[in-house]
Length: 240
Picture (tube, rainbow, N blue to C red):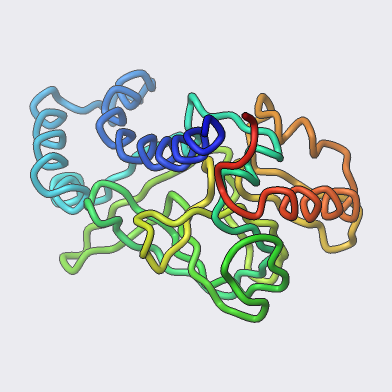
């Protein structure tokens, strides 16, 4: 039961982190030095905050013209190893992105880049090899009908590249959503290098999964990922 609770918390924490980011962005922006010509008045700052609350990113873009938020995509309090990442995911696949589109999230406070990913191998979950699924990554840029733009920038998080192969640890929220999210943010995405020499985790240097995968070749990683997926085919049965 403790493991089941952990799995549910892990999925909700990722989404909660994304939900509160928009309210913190203004404070982040205040910490950054700006050139004198780019200084923003208090009145304009307040107007942007009010617009975000009332009309989301579209409202902020109407005031700024080109509105940019810098967002940390990592959940501060969630740092997983490979076993717990597997446990917390509804699906684990190897896939290749083939196209993408930037979209406003449902609350109009965030932007995601939604990828079409062709599934090469299913390690865990109710997905079929050969399927094309949708995977949303935090960040991207949209243009509105009035010509203004809004952009979410996620420093340090390298988005997927079309044609490359990735191991993706995925969650669905809400449960019937047709679009998957990465479990635990960037921790849920690992690139498999084309030459087979290694893997590149998008996790932070301090995350256990990043440390585990450092220096591992592709086949060693896949062997471990497949083994853990067989051991924990459903979320919430680990770590009692």
